[in-house]
Length: 69
Picture 1 (cartoon, rainbow, N blue to C red):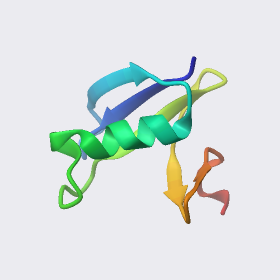
Picture 2 (cartoon, one colour):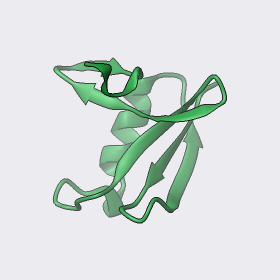
Picture 3 (cartoon, one colour):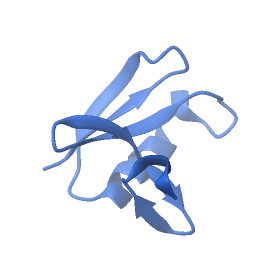
């Protein structure tokens, strides 16, 4: 099961959890009080093949390929 983490603006890990899908992880991220919509600098990362990458959630889809899009 993939591992996800929330990081703050200083790149400190705030929380970690495992989820079956990117969508469930993103819902978890949105529910966290520290990662409110008005809190700048928080991000969601996924451990993909042993490397942490930002998880993009755009247009209702999930992109784990970084900033290539």
